[in-house]
Length: 274
Ligand code: PBG
Image (tube, rainbow, N blue to C red; front, side):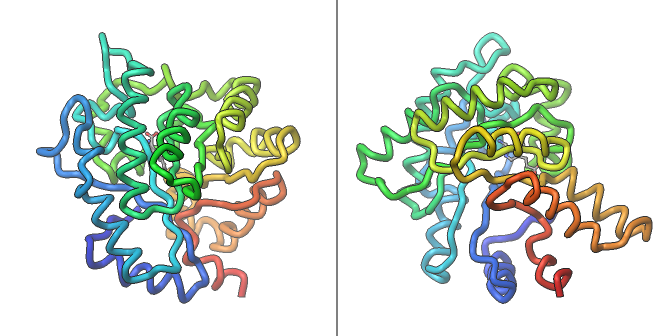
């Protein structure tokens, strides 16, 4: 999992365009000095995300940008929301997520992707966007997001692992044992105005992708997360498995019914197919 600087991201995008990849999801890594308990940097209209979005849009207007909405890159405790008595306060967090979404829309993102798992956030964000006339901004909901160990390399990359310490996100992310709750979450998010729903992680949750797609005729995205990527890429690097296993893993998402896939392998797929 690589990080890019505000300049090196341009050459990465040029490379992606050569591979016909036109959609990217941005995640910020914020200096510790800008983090606090309420994640205020998330709503600073000239923060790293907003600057990067408008720079990318100026240079590559054809690129479609997906921007994550959650407070974990900005909080000193590493949680996605605001803590009250060691518990994430759903409603207090919603107010900040609305503002975060608006700053991202103002900066020019095409797709707002709430990954925080607070209840009611899709409706609340949709309302805020509509009020400010961002009627065409797409809402991609991380609807079925499991409390997974497969996010490990990502948390290292955004520095939230050390802030989280032993604390877990189990009070707002879903239990890996639960199928019904995924359907419940997806139904809520569709009712509140989600345009696309996400299932995450991918490979350990193929049954969820299929169940969601079978029950709701809405675009479903699968996210092959950092831990899945690391498992594959480390095994490939060691010569334990062939790199074409990557295609096999992505085909399994399509078989399950995913309409699109978020993957750290996006820039390798064209070559692998050839
Ligand atoms: C945070 C967020 C996470 C990922 C995307 N957005 C991590 C988490 O919930 O701790 C994980 C992505 C990956 O592992 O590739 N809101």
